[in-house]
Image 1 (spheres, protein in one colour):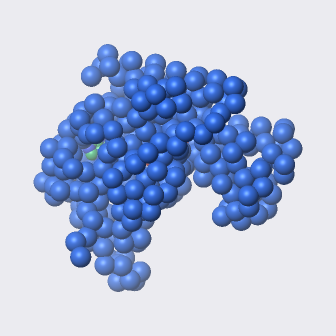
Image 2: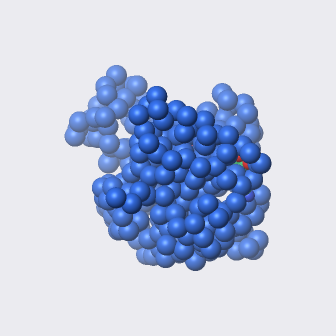
Length: 311
Ligand code: NAI
Ligand code: 2OP
């Protein structure tokens, strides 16, 4: 059986941890790319040497170029700079446009049929950059943020109720920024609406903590941003695609009229299967949820207008 080939661009905290998770889950052979000489090769070799202990036969290759990535089925883009304390995701815009544009052009040249998952921030705008630079069809380019944001939401609810995280299903819509929209109405604990189990003011505090989840980690780490939960989120998306599981996961997907949003990548529930984004699920929103989503989409739109001016 032919193995999947998965390239991870950027071998820093998120990229290397993602490569580790993909290798350990045996989702495909992994190519790890970075501009720093020898570093991806060193990390790839280290991961290969973990194989005998863990019992996984995944091949991991490190590279500073794109020849080794040719014919990838999936490419995860994590290259770019990460937030330092006091920086917003949007501060990263200019540097990361340049990096994501050039990376995507090289990825598209070597793997024109691949599915691209963007991780670099500001996420929704960088997904737009990758779509513009790579010319991929709508279903084959997406951004990872909603799985991470909803995992944070689920973790905080599980902590609050002292129940298994597995019992919690949560939804976060909108852009990966301060205006993201965690939906308490569609969040359930073993099928029971969370609004029946946690008082409103505690839920509001959990929603605020979810929105600030990235900044909370940045403040604690002091030298970078989160990577364990982000890499787990990417691995769940990759798994749904390579195994054609068709999981409904919140992803930054190109909306063409869905939720009243047109021409923007915004976090929406999407079915992920072997074709990539196979459909976008439109759930009914209340007026206030719609207004919050519109505010979030407007923030993404502003960034994309800046992208258009810079690309
Ligand atoms: P990091 O600094 O540890 O790693 C970034 C890596 O990218 C570095 O090794 C750097 O050498 C490499 N790089 C820079 N330019 C490159 C190029 N042109 N080609 C190939 N590699 C290049 O940063 P970390 O923590 O891994 O974060 C990466 C990005 O992901 C950041 O923009 C961060 O904000 C974002 N992020 C997004 C999340 C999300 O939910 N979407 C979650 C966590 C991080
Ligand atoms: C996060 O939410 C930095 O966007 C990244 O952790």
